[in-house]
Image (cartoon, rainbow, N blue to C red; front, side, top):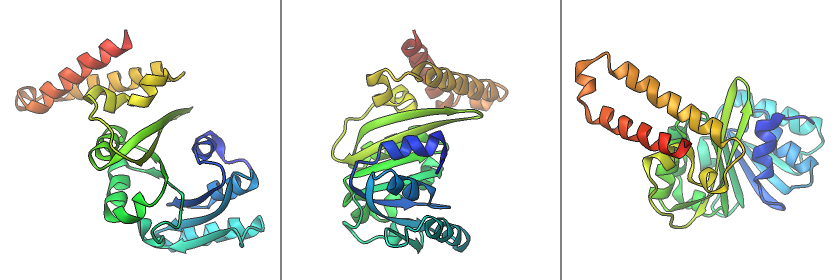
Length: 227
């Protein structure tokens, strides 16, 4: 079964032997692939909508894994009981949506040993939310799959330090380990900052705002990291 580089990279971050909860599972490709690879013992595949749950059950049945994957319909982590999953994956949503899902069920989230999160946008805000709410950033990955560039964040319960705005934007673990795609990540963040500043410069009110000054400071810090 081929699932693409994004999901394969997420899958490689799931600890071997885990009971997986795949939240927002869609077609349940990730848990099925992980079971085929012998990476996990079993899985709960959750999705809020009936259509994706039906598609997930079809995928599971097609591969004869009905005894190993349970598909449950429900919102976020409400499909789980505390301690039911060792590893929780939430992928393919906005960073603010992911943080809202975690905030809505903290007992369930914190009963897992590891979170593997793949925000489609808002990764910096998600990193900041995690460290402010009792999560430690343990690993990060990047996937360049044109036209998409994905950021993947791993976190476990525990205290982490507060990072700088530039570190939240780029990824502190990516910086520490000198990821092979770090140059592309820095260029993306710098270009994004420059574009936002250019847009704000069209408004006199925006040019004198605190947000404009914060972006200028962030851009300067990112450019230092790029050198």
